Amino acid sequence: GGGDGDGYHQGGRGPRDNTPRPTECEVMTNHNKLDIVMDPVNVEGPCDYDIFRFKVEFKNVRRVAVNDPETGTDTVNFEEQEMRADDKSKKRFFSGPMPWRVIKKIITEQREKDSNFILDYDGAELAVAPRHSSLNGQITENGTIHFRVRVKADCEEDDPEANKVRERSFAVSLTKTTEVPFSQIMNAIRGGNTSTEYLTMIINLILKSSAKLSGMILLDPRSPTVYFPLTEQERMIGRRGLPEARDGTSNLIAGVSQTAAFTKNEQIGSGGAFVVTQTKVNWADKEYWRLSDNHDDDRNWIPLLLNGRNPRIAGVPIISTEQPLDKDTINLVEKALAKIRFNIRYTIIKSDAERDKAMRARGKTQAEIEDSRRKVFKDQGISKDINQDPHVRIMRSARDYTFKWNDIDITVSEYYLQKYGIQLQYPNMPIVHVKKGWFPAEFLHQKFARSNDANDRDMIDQVLRYYDGHAGSALMQDVIEKRRTLLNQIRADGLSLASRLNFYNLRISDDPTCLKAKIIQTPAIKFRNERAQLRDGDFNLKDAIFSKPAALNS
Image 1 (cartoon, rainbow, N blue to C red):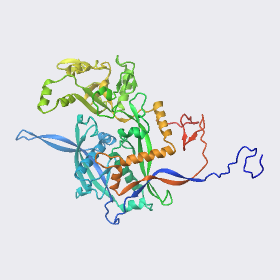
Image 2 (tube, rainbow, N blue to C red):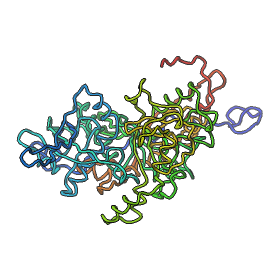
Image 3 (cartoon, one colour):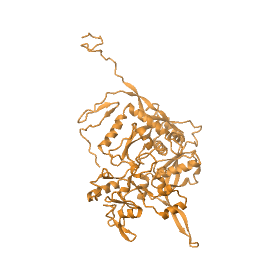
Image 4 (cartoon, rainbow, N blue to C red):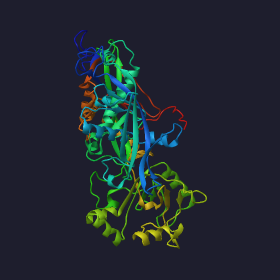
């Protein structure tokens, strides 16, 4: 062997590595600097970028016919009805997409009149706008602004079937409550010693609202996570074809969450404000098989809740579609349907000559007449039939339930054949009750929504594979790509998220923040069955079994 100091291992097995272990390195973070676009000339007095906070109040607007006793004619008045705080319908209203739909319609209509109109909303009862927004010129002496709009009751305005959906009217009042001086915002963004809890809430509101109003999807109105439009999903997932569940009814979709973080000068970099971005994936039920407007064949392009090839109803396995379900299976199907919202679709086969003639007299084309036979009821849920004793939500089959029609007893199956010319494909399958009446299960179609039961082993594995493929440096590239797409995502009103932020004199840096970090020894994480493997900056926990799993109380 070599002697001391000859630079070789004893035994001559190769050179000794005397390179000192590095103690620090530069790392890229998922923090992007939030900064001021330009310094206002005057921030001490009223400033264009001061933020006004508003309390939002929604009211239903009902058409009320009032009879004039002198003329005997009816006139239509519009009556505003408040939503009571203890009203269950108010809770349902705020847990769904309707508030966003209403606010979005207000913004669209107002921006058509004045491009300087800007408003951002939190999904509940809070909204904000900069002082220079034309919104503030509409504030009355008592500090309130009033709007009235009509929106699609059960779908978005750009839904391919929006022409099939009725509209609802709402009155909206915005009452100014507080002002946040821009000097306070600027001080916090530049790392000054100021309280930031309230500012964090406002910036988070603007980030979420700007993302939603620029075309992103909210699967949960209360969550900060927004998902990219369906047309962008294949690029965002980063592979050819979106990952699907085994039954083909759900897709894995990608999104991001954004939150504001304020730091002092001695913390991150030079301190200040940052937007922290995290990538997210979730399972979503398909509403349309293809992302197109091709309506040629409903059964092929829209997923049914009743699957005859792999017999299931709303995910519940059934023995056969040829015979009515037993009581236990009916109960399981009812519970599954109670968890979801769905759409009802069917096409009338039998033509009505008198009706068609009347439509032609009103100038309707043959294509419009044909389309009028296609019936669509969006966003439905099962409900109890109060005319039945006991009040039931589901019945065994379309051949079991009879009722009076044209003075004769008739089954649901016979009714659809005689009245509409529709021969049910599965007459032995259940019928379900919604507010509009009883419908065969084969008319029920899946609605786009977050998947309730994404616990299939294959679905869990696909989520883990996505995160494994987007770890370490790949994760940072994924965050950068998604952030750039998000900032430039443009809605129909012509504003991207970046341009909406510009109304507040704010901008998000394109480049992620880089920091110096201390290098520590890699920790050893041992599970019952193996030691966790470190790969590209992340521990791979797939198939790891905990030595002492925690109990999860439901």
